[in-house]
Length: 385
Ligand code: ADP
Image 1 (cartoon, rainbow, N blue to C red):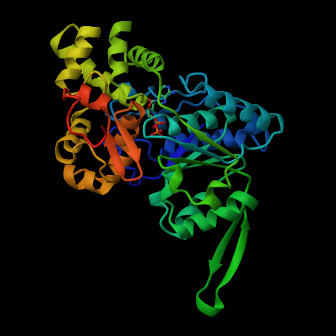
Image 2: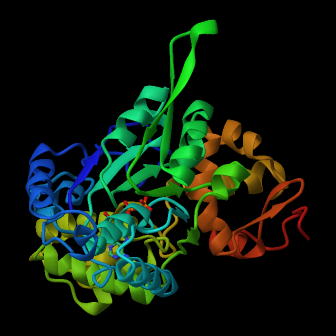
Image 3: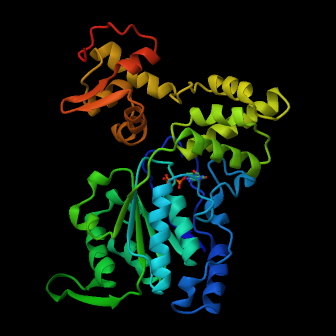
């Protein structure tokens, strides 16, 4: 499998603030090209290639030692059992028919593994994954550039697909349904539409906001799958795996301490792991146990439930300035100086998941559990009571 991608503005994602490192990778591209030469037609779909996924693998720090954190195959992919089962069936059926996979959509908060699972699909199918992000597909020629380069069975991964410009979205309809690219040549009255035949390919969309997708686009995906937050046990496995890959000793209690504070999100688990690893290296003998993990994460302002400074600021603002709510999203953004999209797509899902926020028709409301966690008296005159 090889992956080519475009740089783009991503959904605000506090767990991915550093450089995107899954850029176009010419060497991966050329190795795939030779693999392509040696395999032809449908056979290619049946044969997983043994290429490494280095081009997708460098995580947020960009350090070379991070190169293999991203699981390559579906069997390395931890958790999301139902999702893997559904995908396993889709892969087996497509391979038995020597056909590409149906178009797929993954949705869920950032960092849960949407890109990773798509890369694993490409690996299992033995095809190339082309990566881009909706905001990068501004004009017709941007998406056309991707489509004309696809080969039979290839996967086109579009991140943040809910942000597709209208013109791009409309070009995708015939491409997805009839494997046809309609290009308008000329202008005004002399303009005419030329159609280009495309090979059968698989479009994989990823989004943090499935509700923002238009119905015609959503309906063109054969499978729409939600990624859920991970259980602590699954995150413990991810942390232990990261420890092995980064050659950092971490015991089970240490892994639990990191997992508990990772907001159900693998990317955050890996990020916290790296911060704890730094701390253990500087303050101790480099090994991570529960005590080292807890002390380091307190220092980095990550509390035992994984709330950080911004989560606490959001909740405190709602409690102290608005009696616990209801507060509208825009008011929350204005009162905290955070971007409303970031609040909605990055912070809020986890606070809803752990029952610290509730969504009502009139806005967001803080719950008793959040009050207790933050040390407020539960008999405050909250609108909730
Ligand atoms: P998303 O596309 O949903 O924002 P990613 O696929 O980029 O998330 O995942 C972020 C990181 O988390 C990956 O680079 C990988 O290291 C790790 N990760 C995600 N899902 C898993 C998983 N199921 N098992 C192990 N690690 C994972």
